[in-house]
Image 1: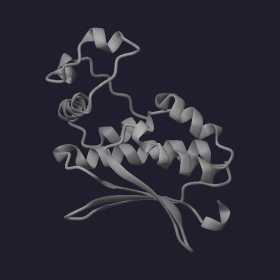
Image 2 (image 1 turned 180 degrees about the vertical axis):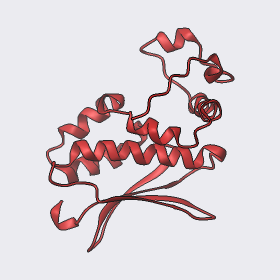
Image 3 (image 1 turned 90 degrees about the vertical axis):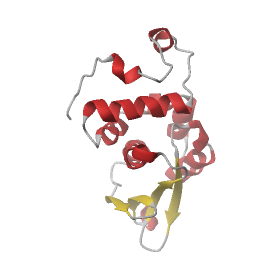
Length: 168
């Protein structure tokens, strides 16, 4: 895993976030502040996939009580149902849907709002974050089979195929 250290006040430029707020454990961010930070990070890093990497670095503690509820669920199916019911407690700006058919079960992530230059990076971030959560929730013998990105002209879409439905 590659580590990048950016100690640049430019990350906070135009965000309305200051050092005092960063030190306050009770402070929260407005969506516009968070998205501005991500735009700055994308621009400063020069790495179009930095948010994909960021999602892989989120852990269950990042989600607070939401994360605790997920890992406390008695089954994977109940964790998915709970997670989707309370998806608004997460940091996503996209639609997250669980699907299951005769061949696959998975998570589909699609665009809700136009995030401009952040659209694909934010979908990538959500995919990698969901991947980490799924790996924590699934028994070891059940693995994610594949992650697919389909960048179509009119709609961004990503799929995470979890397993054959009969194995869930």
